[in-house]
Length: 272
Image (cartoon, rainbow, N blue to C red; front, side, top):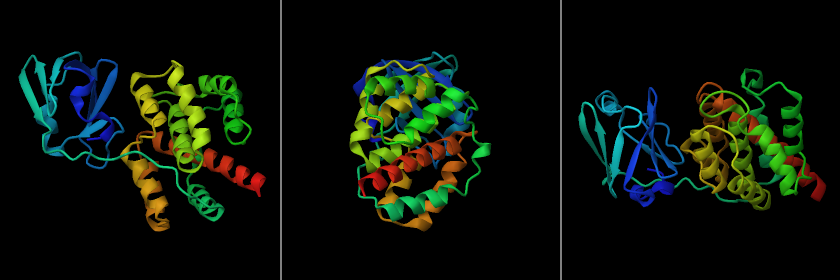
């Protein structure tokens, strides 16, 4: 279970099923989404991981808008096939908060070299001028006006298709590398994201909200841990795993990290 949603009853005692997919589902409690995954290799920034072998049994009880009651270590799902209780009293609480760390130019360039091996022609990046211009601005260290940033984010966020549109995945990758390198830039993005009602999907909006608090899903958090200890072999392996997430979500996220690296290199060069 992600640290950000523990204890799960802090958001309220009654909720409902928001959405159901092949290997995941989401519940809504107040204005908080909680993500449940049957994928042992993925823990959402606002999620709980469930054992793979439980998937067929649990999915029988999952219909959109079913009522759910929430206790500290348990949720109860009320469905037309019966009542299902899920107990989380023995579940591990997983830290997913990325910290600002020391990253030198050599490390940044090595990271970009590894990312450049991926074919971003296979990503979902929109081929329109406004998006490209906005992305270019994110790569240059001159952005310090919240109003200008708001305008840029309104172009990027929600741009693309899917549960997490391309622009959102890109922004999460960008903020991930900024959180590690430049807390001031990250804070500017956090303030804008927190104050604006950006137009995107409910699920993607929650990922952005967690991202603004420095909390990222487990694949990115693992990448952070490997970068922190400068284990480049594991960094390379983790980048590959991220690239395979979703349809194009992983590649879109890597494109965002790459844009952030362009910013960092320019910033370092300016400061000598």
